[in-house]
Image 1 (tube, rainbow over the protein chains, first blue to last red):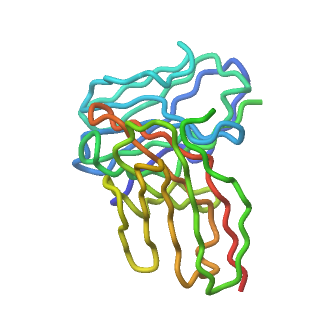
Image 2: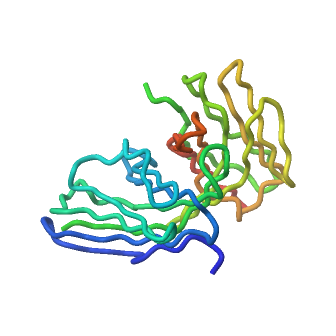
Length: 114
Length: 112
């Protein structure tokens, strides 16, 4: 497909478990972003990748959250020891480059922590 | 105070009406502005994108930016039931990261 692909689309897990969320950006897009969307907080930035480097991690809420990107393409967001407040929709976006380039979003992973 | 303020609505209009959606912001360093449309259980879809003051038109959509007033608008002409969705404004500051700051979103319902 031509768009940003995220998997799984839904994830239900128990509190304390680790989860991995995957993002496949649009081919050729060097910039990749993770955002979180929750009812009370709206859409919040988590982390930005340029290639395989993450120059801006300022939005990661705690050290339980980490992300990596390999081959300048696929990215994985990992949440360790999940808490109920981690329940949200995790959205990935990509753009041709950083800055002024428009960002295109996937449909997200809906994460529910029981 | 949030950096970007957007009335959550809901906003309900009859089919064919002109819709006006607005955001205000406090950070004068914002340099570029986007409008996204989001349907239920889907990701945000880019509608409009601009980095200058003034108007930009694309079909039934017009984006307006007034940097002096820190105010942006999205106008939808001849609104259709298929326009029923949540509309999000987003803004960016630095060309170094591309991090976007979003408004809370306005829920729009267009009634047939």
